[in-house]
Image (cartoon, one colour):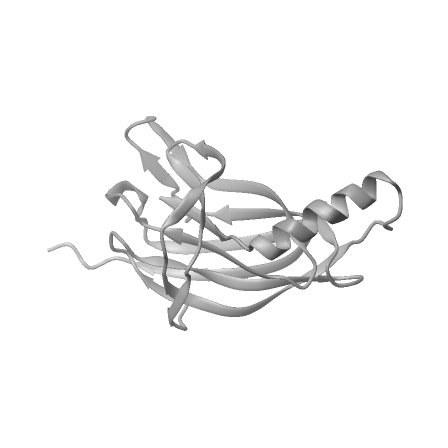
Length: 177
């Protein structure tokens, strides 16, 4: 399974410049106040550009490009190769400033059981720096059968200890005969 984010080279360059300015105390701290989800559903993704965070029990965190929206839906077919998620913008005091964001993915209550790690994964958290007003993507791709679990999957977006956004999907699996 891959937890995916969108890579934006212009935002990365801007972030580097702003971080230099922060070091010289020329930028005032900014706060994220909400996440605006402006697109959600099923996606087709381009190639991986590499991992951006350590894996969590086989659950990889990768950066991708070439994200194409296929269908607006909150119902996700539980099949290998299916990608779903959200496109969003972090809103706050100002545009173009870097802010910390924690993305929490909650799996269905029964969790995902990894035979490789002989443990159950109930939640995955990723901390990132986002640019206020920038377009971003966060999503999931089912790569292996053990990752597919029917139920409600929830993307939560947190600024410090305040939840500033949420989106839910229902993964459905075909009936077993």
